[in-house]
Length: 315
Image 1: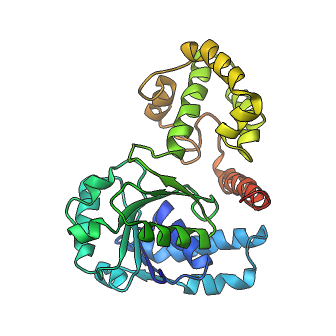
Image 2 (image 1 turned 90 degrees about the vertical axis):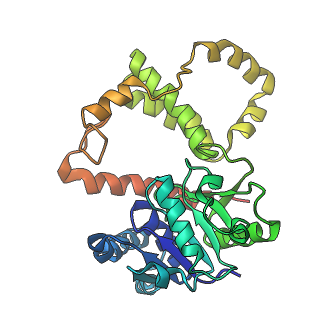
Image 3 (image 1 turned 45 degrees about the vertical axis):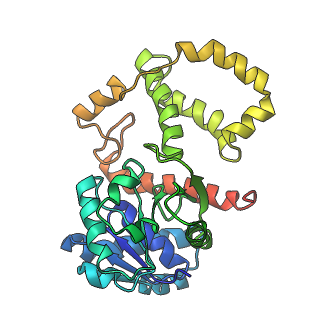
């Protein structure tokens, strides 16, 4: 049974992963090499927990206990040596992850399960330098941002791991409030990101063609397909509409839709102009500096509303 957890990396994803497990009562060692981030990450988590409490997901009286479940570390060996489950959320650099897993393979006991939060790097490549026994206890466990609010987690089941170990991790995630997706084949992007990129490709293409303004394109998605996607998957939607209809519409539309194999030029131009979205103050929309926190909070409020609602139809 998994009791003690170590999270490697306290950035955007890492601290959210640690925060989630701590919210559900697990003791978490959070390792971070950057001293300034390590010194401020608990304040970041407290701010997020305050917001979550204000919006009714937890009681404000729980916050200190949750924070006490997280122990910060600057020593890798101490962070992982007693862990039952270790998940890394470090930069997407294959050599870095290979070396990291190789190092902790020497620190952890033989039962410890290793995981990566990646959705773009191959598991076989990441585990090249670990022992053969450890390869049977390694997997991808991909979270969505913000980790403490998004209820999905993609878990790899690529044939390297015995079924009982996979089940143990699946149960851990279910206890931490996650809906798990079993991914059977190691493909770049796994499942959710590939679906998301398919939608994004057509959205960027519609802007490029001048079919509608960005706000109207987002409105069409939010109150059209995404309205159904909030409670139903694509395959269920297709069944409800009739597969004959979907087949006919596919024949009519897919040949004239965007099928490029690289990022859209309009997206690349935004990046070149340093218009990166909320982080820079402008992307497809404008984000005045004085309103950034307000905009982020409003975005997260919508996620919390959906998270609360989703509990009524999760099976």
